[in-house]
Length: 106
Length: 119
Image (cartoon, rainbow over all chains, first blue to last red):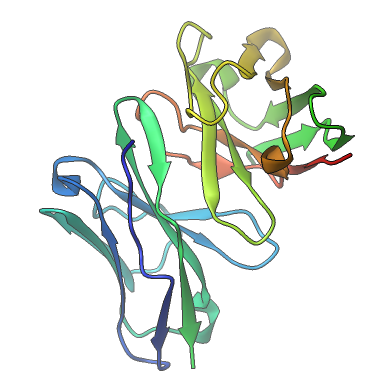
C-alpha cells in the first residue's frame, strides 16, 4: 500500500519560516494537499492541488510538490500556526494521509 | 454555512456492530462525494472510505474492507457508516467529510462521533 512519510515534529521561532515535508513514491506525479489540525478541533484544508490556497487561508501558507516530496512552507510563522499538519494524496482510488507533523512555535 | 453533524457513536463490544449517521446541510448534498475519516485517540488521520455523489462507487481502506459499508440517502441529505465485526483497533473519533471520494479533496469536516470498542 502507498505510504506518505512526514517528520514527527518541526520547531520554528516566531517570524521565521517553517518547512514540513511529505515523501512518497513518485508523489510529484500526484496532487498533494495539506490539512491543519489544532487540539480539539477538526482538520482544516490549507493547501490543495500542490500549491493552491482555499479562501480564507493566509498567504503565508504555500506548497510545492516535485519528485518524491511535497512541501508545506509557512512564512513568517505565528503562534497561531502551532498545530498538527497532515499531507494527503490519492493512490489507486485510496486516499492516503501522512502520519502528521507537530509544528511547535517557540 | 456548511454543517456536518455525526451521530450514533458509543461503546460496543468486540465483534459487535454500530451504525453512524451524518446529517449534512448548507450545500447541495447530491453534488458531492462524501467520506468517513477516523482518528484514534492521540493518533493521526485515517481515511475509512468514500462514496460518490449517487452511491454508485464506494472505496474503502484495506483495514475496514468487508466489515464496513458506506451508504447515502440524497433525499435525506444523509451519509451513513455501517460498522460490523468491530475490533479494539476501530476505537476512534469518526468524522464525516465533504469530499474525499473519487480523487476529490476534503473540503469540510464534521466534529466527529466517538466509537469505543471494548469488552
